[in-house]
Length: 431
Ligand code: SF4
Ligand code: SF4
Image 1: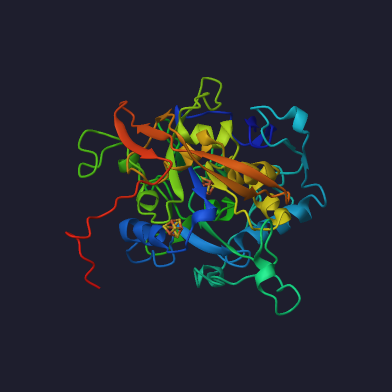
Image 2 (image 1 turned 90 degrees about the vertical axis):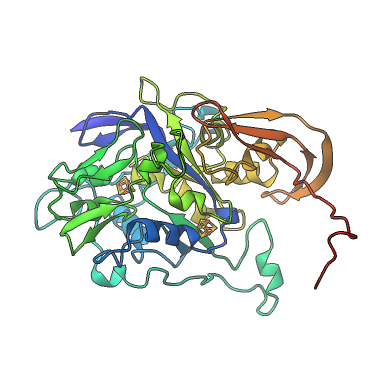
């Protein structure tokens, strides 16, 4: 039994294996505020990897409507309930803004992770490394159950308009796009009795060795995000493979010169909510400080993107810019105590942050570094802040340039979208 450091919890925690880290880690940021629930990501993944017999229920990428939706059904509320039962009223964070450090950017989690709560629920077939449950057949039906179902009551009965005003809507829902988080401490890996699951040293992508898997489904039971899925036609479990040929730069069609590219679900996103990449890990197993890497910048430097259910303890590498309109207690349960800070940053971004937010979906290649060139001030707008106050946001037409692994420029975009006036004598409107 090992003890490992989990920076998202700000403390050490129990894990069955000793601490060991890859050289680079696959990670992604999703801006929930922008998702339009088009499911293009879902279909891009499905049509690439899970279109065969026995994979009908397999959606490595899915987009569910919160709070009621979920695939498999109630995956998160069920586990949250189990953790609460294992540690009643103990699932809390200790937050002291004066003590926010890179090692504990959200404070310290005082509760139990899935590893620490293992064994709290008796199991008929032996001890467990992680608290979890096996979804039943019904849970894997209707992947988009409760789509666009809102929660809450319209204010004063008929006055629906005032129920959907910032800073928090009284009637709300949001779209949550999900895939395997290629966790730093994967519960699927911890639980596998065959040691069929491994984390790649070069990029931290978590894979299941199909030749070792015997289909015991212990990974399905243990993964708190339910992203390892059993395939009856082969008798093995399967999961997202992080489109590793693309990340390696080995897809001959899109990477003729070996340039690492984003996964299928990331690069297909028309909502421009997704930015995926690799962060470098230092010799101590921590993220190497690099504020010119867009993921490092958004997640560690600005803390605008937060891990999903960090309290589960797997150190997920999927990070989300929380939706501005959703009641804070719900968001804090899902993304931890950093929610208010993240929403404040997002509500009125400074010129540097605004530039980095432009990078989402401007190139298929993974951006390893960015550079910003300052431009003129072009506008001032009044912004409603989450606390109810107002702030003036100054907008500058800065230019951000993104570079790939080899230091080659792969994207260049200005903060102000360029507009072009067409010559009416040449381009007559034919409608
Ligand atoms: S999200 Fe689940 S399947 Fe993916 S690495 Fe984490 S524990 Fe494993
Ligand atoms: S493709 Fe993008 S915008 Fe569309 S559902 Fe997926 S994450 Fe949301």
